[in-house]
Length: 401
Ligand code: ASP
Ligand code: MG
Image 1 (cartoon, rainbow, N blue to C red):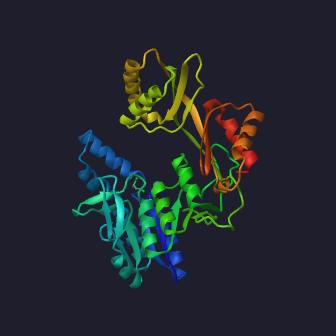
Image 2 (tube, rainbow, N blue to C red):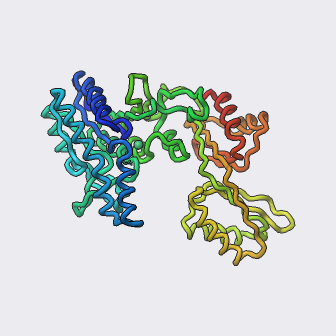
Image 3 (cartoon, rainbow, N blue to C red):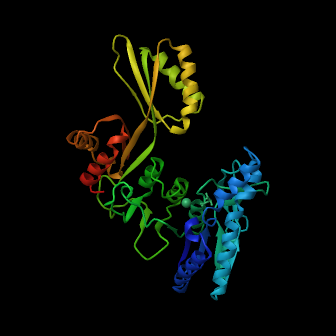
């Protein structure tokens, strides 16, 4: 008999009928003889609606009260789902994060799980109950209700699985992890497996299926995570430890991000002090810099480009004003029609020549890129957004994604 943690997201429990359908799906697995913990999100857009209500009272609502408010969404779902099990003749109990022993620390609305006292969950499982746990919430050392940040139910599920040392199944409205976003490349192939490292890299580079923190916990405790559709029985994707049986592919996926603001500081008198002034100011204003490039000096001047998130545009405007006061004669230009494409693959660690083969693909297809950066398992390129579709298409075709 195995223990399984299953998680169902907000869309999967968005209506009473959907909650009944989830109950049916869980019961099938229970009948096979498994012990089951189900983690659920708030129904549909409930969390957004709760946040919206708070915003009608205050622009900056107290964070403790915010946690008190937004944690209620999940509590509605757990009670209803537990009732659905009972109605079908299965013993079940719903537990809030606190009742499930989830202890958190950090700042309100962005707490982290630091431990789970799992005895209560285990006792209920021993008594044959289907245990339904509220995702996204826990309790801090003051006994206050906390939440884990948007999308945090994934984290609850994987952390429970880590504590119970079992597989975590995430059911959602997509049917697995694809090598490329199927909305941009419709022939994208679903992956049978992806390593934790690749998944974390893809997520941090902009591919948003699962919460990154949940994958980090899976990686740390070596908990296999299975991502599949709530509906039907098509095979999903396993996120697990890299091993030889995984496909011997150098590139596993291509992630695409349009949240790129490229800033170029032109006419910078060439000396290293000026470069440090620019990046020091950005750092002091907490602007997160992604890529950096610099032209070779020409007549004693250089141009420096960097990319950041579009969210930071107003802060960058501030920085621009300050810089103009300190470095005479500079001109700053900003481009926002920029896309970042990143190829990701753990196989790159052992294989050389990946960057050059992609340069060749771009050259053969007249695609100009602006910047390149690499990590151990990824290579990222920025290019004009007008070339995005073409670049994704040729890369996906050539790399068989
Ligand atoms: N209900 C929370 C949210 O909408 C947590 C989750 O769905 O994972 O962010
Ligand atoms: Mg989610």
